[in-house]
Image 1 (tube, rainbow, N blue to C red):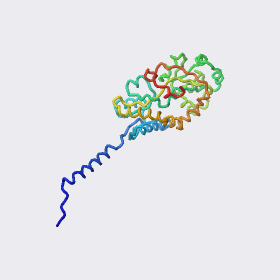
Image 2: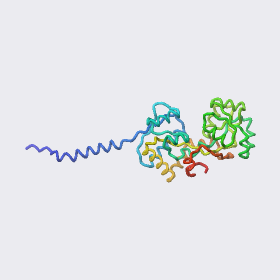
Image 3: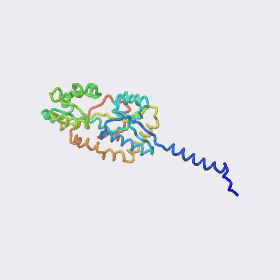
Image 4: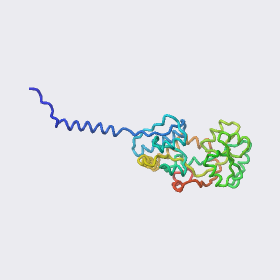
Length: 286
């Protein structure tokens, strides 16, 4: 006698379990997040690693994918508005904070606002003599006219001379101004390309400024994951461990000798009230 075939009723539970397993596999596939491609750099690698740390903290399985081609900051912002990229990392502004959802955890702990001077080395003695903020304001500062620093510095009472970025190095060499003010992460590498200039050795100018991760306003899930993940990383110490041990951050402190300089703090009237209210624990040196 031939064995009877299993009835459909007996097969249904097994088929249902197989379908649920396939569905679960599909749901578990990681979400791909697209970001604007940038030239590879230690600081950019630091930022991407920080995002990965945030996602690990909240148990989210995201895959980060760069765009096929590099983008300017302005284009990246437009692509975020249209939904072609999922997040950007850039210096904050009132405009960006209105257009996008800012993740208000300073990515570099405010090191973006730590500035040092590129100078004609023959002028070092004038900087070494600076002891007060009023002394500092007697020196002229060179900046690109398109940079937000120009309005900030003028509002704080500094004399600013403007010129195109590529011209400012020659202007510094010809004493058109005293100090080409640059970020602590920028000046050492730029001076290496302009051997007639030097990084000023004694002073550090600090104003409240930061870069944020920005996402589209409608992308509440991604915004919540990033903000919650970064706050959890602060709470369990992993943010500060990552910050202190990353080669990009260590290089900033070592190359600029931040802790060996006389520090001058100036206000930033351009900050929004929301960014001004960020707790001190998220800022370096407060």
